[in-house]
Figure 1 (cartoon, rainbow, N blue to C red):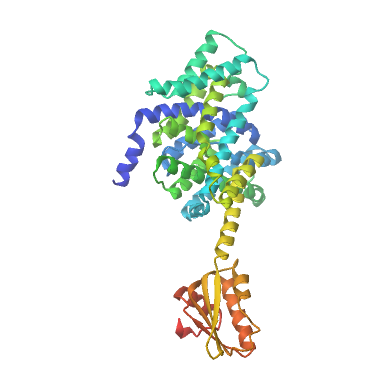
Figure 2: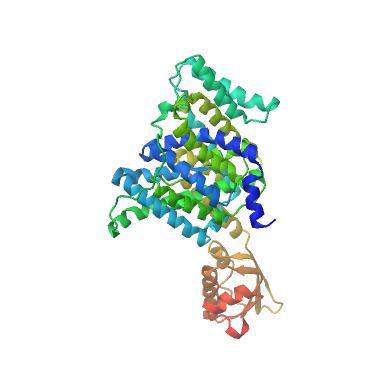
Length: 489
């Protein structure tokens, strides 16, 4: 399939389901975007406008069809400190710089760093997101009347039972309509969308940040912009990977990173806050049947339609309907099989997954959780590989030559075990052969350890011979030491 045909299929290959799923996804966007707008210290309209712009732009330029992006997540946590210290105008400037950095990240192919995020870390990321999504609904279920619990229960019943008999329209959309009609016909003490914050009442328009164009301004916004760019790229790449796994398809992470940068540049020009991929809403979109770019576009376009044209009706949607939808998304997002896997997966794998969950839930920072998971994964991997190094020795019949056979990987974490395996106080052998046929030297720490070892042996009057170095190891040794003449490489 040509690139143009594939792009057309991503837009128009699933029109009905993409349209309906995008509409439902809009309602899932509203409460989280408003909530994170408060976290960032900006008016809810700023977050809602931003989500509209991001959805529309990334639907055109992104690399992962079916993925929902908006103004929420850890990006809002980073932005909060900037808004408190310098105001919204500096946030807009930082958003523009954030977008430029993300475009640069994409052009430099820095998305490949996501290869170092292992499956246990991704599982922990998903589970932590599910927990955070559910915990965000808890305040809406406290200090309320029985009417709220009844409506949430009814909403969940509709969401889970309707698909058994009717699947043409996503059940969450039916849930929203039914619960809204009931609350209008039978007035009850329920919170509505209007209670979540001031809704937009006009179309977004182009603006330019009202900040001095100086190095001082750059010094202020640069650290925040870099943090927002890194966190946004991380969350979007993680979300795209989750979509890849759920749909058993592949996507262009480089294009997604570049597309996110273009979307955030557009957001900054329309007076919004930077955003990123939203895994909860994305998983929900997939559950509702959304697979293409149209679902992403509809989620943003319908958001603007609801906020501006249908604002009086949207304001009457009970929050209980949104809570029911988000509870369903939380339950479907959580990897329940990972609990069963704790019993038979390697202990290190379980520790990595649980640590990722604990840090994310404890800090509400997805980037911090992933960073801890990746760090632990790297440490455990280095320990496991270093422990597989084996050094054995034999001595010739006349007792003058000792041969060491090295098997395994020699790098910074295994050099101590490597050097400790050699007997430097051997007084019987005048010659030492180090057989590295089944070994590989990976870094300068390994080369330095080998050079130091050979130097100590030669200082004791031993003749040292290196055998079996593979070409890569031999090149590294010859380039940085005098252990091998260059004509042997």
